[in-house]
Image (tube, rainbow over the protein chains, first blue to last red):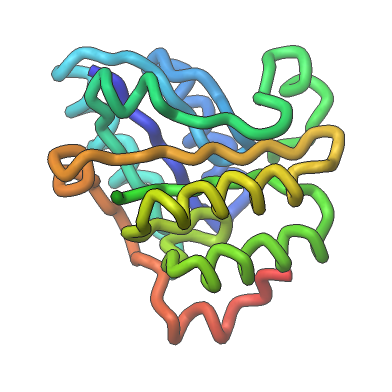
Length: 93
Length: 93
């Protein structure tokens, strides 16, 4: 299944840890605070559990958006998509 | 149609203007840099045009995600969803 995860986490360390979690679960960064990817139903369970662990701050919020193939294909990207090379240059934490 | 707009805009002023645009187009903020809402096909055209105007920075990127009803209903929210009250307290610009 395809998922998009977007997050608003106040604490820098927690935000960095969540980003590591999302990479470990097989997702790819598409924005500073957004990841997308294809995962199995069992990984989706892990994803929800991990997000629940990380979103502990007062104003923290994470949205997990499951996308059908049709919605996935019609995502519009405007501007410069995040790339691994760029990721190395930008201070995320 | 249902849309989710997420953005990564470096310039504070441009980011604030984009947020105003998205509100004007009828979307509601769900995170610091994410809006959702139901719009017409003609507004979707305006939305793409506006996003194209705002994403001018070197690393700026905006994703417009159209969601079918099924995907819309199964969005998982973890933590505290953004509210209008909260929006007044948080410095977005």
